[in-house]
Structures are given as structure tokens and as C-alpha cells.
Amino acid sequence: MKTIWLQRLIKWTTSYQKFMRGRYGQFDSLNKTLLVITLLGLLLNPWLPFQLGRILSIIMLVLVYGRFFSKKIYPRSNENQAYLRKVAKIKGFFSKQKQTVSDKRTYTIFSCPNCQQKLRAPKGKGLIRVTCSKCHQSFEKKV
Image (cartoon, rainbow, N blue to C red; front, top):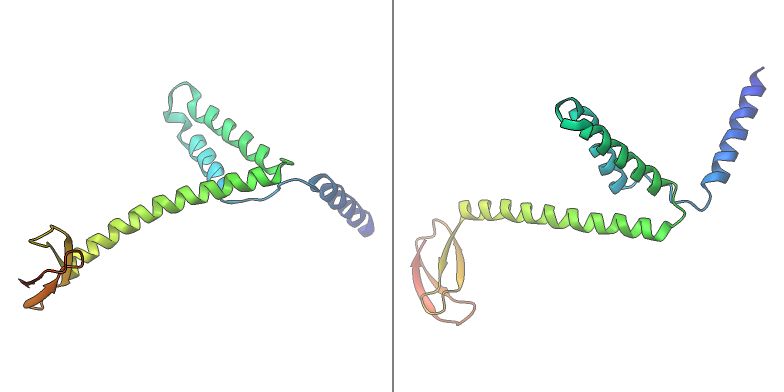
């Protein structure tokens, strides 16, 4: 009795491996995001009109399965890479915003009187001599 279920399990896994050979079959970042959108659509369905959450969830689930079982491996990989580039660009924008906020705490930002180039110097240094990086004019500034 013990060997029968083991044989069936082995047979099932080999047939699954044979079916998945040559398919994309990866649970990548884009598929994860599509599944999260599916879950949000199902959770928000009671509050959305016209069963919009259910329709959105079905569409996203079809996309996930279509990408997962696709035999076009390189286009699916390229889709994921394009998605990752867009996410990195968005994350970079917000991290840059966070960085400018922290820069304002530790640096004084001012303009060159000659060419209006933005410059920065650490706060609390008193009167310092600054040389503009663009026009190379020297001037004194209290920071």
C-alpha cells in the first residue's frame, strides 16, 4: 500500500515535469505583483460597483497563468526586466526625495552670486570661503 501512493506521486511529478519542459514557469516579480492585484481586487470586490473587483481579479489571474505556462521564455523574461526597471525608477525617485530631505537637515543650500549654480555646505561651520564649481568664483558665506 505504501509503494502505490509513492509510485503515483513519482508518476505525477514526471508527467508535470514533462508538461513544464520548455515553458517559462517562473514565479517572478511581475507575477507576484499581478497576484497581489488579484488579491486586492477580490478583497475590494464588495465595495466596487458592477463586480469590478472580480473582473479585475479574473483578468489578472489569466495573465499570471498565461505568463507562467507560456512557451515564449525570452519575451516573458523581457517583460519582467522592463517591470523591474520601472519599479527601480520609481523607487529611485522616492529615495532621492528622502535624500534631499536629509540633505536639508545637515546642509545649507545656496546659490552662487555670479552664475546662480546651486551649492551646498555643511551647517554650523560659521563663515566659510566657497568656490563655485561652475564658474570658479570665490565668495564668503555664513552657514
